[in-house]
Image (cartoon, rainbow over all chains, first blue to last red; front, side, top):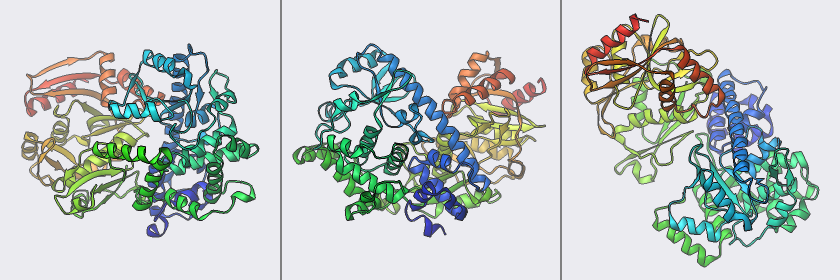
Length: 340
Length: 275
């Protein structure tokens, strides 16, 4: 059974999509499912999805632990957001939360059981110097000691170099837009902030359409699809909760139509997300993405090295012009970084 | 706690199968954690084979070990899963032995002698609960056993072999990052009773290489030392805090210095009978 079910992460996707499908699993199937879910940072989400489903006692215990751990992560993440709010109270614009912390703070389905690592916030670019100063004064410190990395972030990226809090050991990423400055697409960062929604505690989150646009941009217009199954699950939950009204127009405004359409097609294909008819058929290229998203075996190992490497190169191709890309990859290679 | 261990090489698995032969299989056939020992580059499987530690939870920069130390790599990788991934119990980096349903926990820096003392007490009628991690259940306050292979280092190897001439040992792993290591297989009682928890009754902070001495510690010092000895205290949040403060409030703690094993054993027995 294990050989059959754990060649790729279909098993995990199936369990998230249809919790009753786990009834067919034997011990090896459960072991593979748990290893894949951990490797894809989806164990808490899976535990939440499978809550109340009949399963062997050993699996139930592991998933109960994962649920407990997700609740604790959520509490820590929301507290960290509050710490940032306090530190940045003197800045004249409010803090907009992004990704996992935003889903948790806003009580969205995408946040249920989700693992949350760093705190991601969005601030207007003009405020960055003040924000940086305020965070340093409040106990955050630089983590990138390498001057090349630091300069790369400042000149080319959509965020400050990451900072870590010296007492709480938590990382913060301060974004001023949602894609690198050197990317070919330029989302409307001012609109993201202007149309954000206030929570009770004074923090803000993106509007539903912008949340989907950001998740799609994060998944397809940036990065090499690491953690892709989780990001796609976010999109599945967001579309499930908010629908797609106004999404097409909003995506066009940010130059993210293609990314949003692909996200919708793949979410439908993998998680059966309810989307309009035109987003229900995968293109040939979509199938490559699916192949990459599912590249994980029953031991939690990354598989399909060539596909992964292809997407690694693609992520950089999207991120910067060719000459700059060549220079960047050469510099990183000399510093000993190896992608796969 | 059950583990699934995969390896690019046969040898480490064969060692584990031999040394853990008397252990039960994971409940329902579903292990809590997956561990993988693999060659980071394909040629490292044969050419100066180097074992990289993998599994559900990994440290980014863990250095690989030579294949001759494959057993150590497997043990380290299993410990890593516990240290980074275990969320059911408050985890203390401590050894534990039990008598009459009550447990002594011994914790300290590497080289303090917690494994050695646990093994020697095991040879004197105590039940060995574990030499690496003590698992405190936040719901009950009880300590659960985790009796894996006991990792003995350098001079401790011969001391324990002399005390336990009948016991089974793993191969001598010479020249590891922590010196020479040899694993002791816990006795049949430790394995048979591993599901039996115990009431924590005494917390010891042993220190090897000093004249025999003993002192009490204030609750704040015990608290700080135990949080340092715990790998998941922070991640457990309030449950961790409750379990930790309960332990500090209810269980007496002593720091003991000792020049040799005999004197340490005598100190532990004296403190025990005074409880």
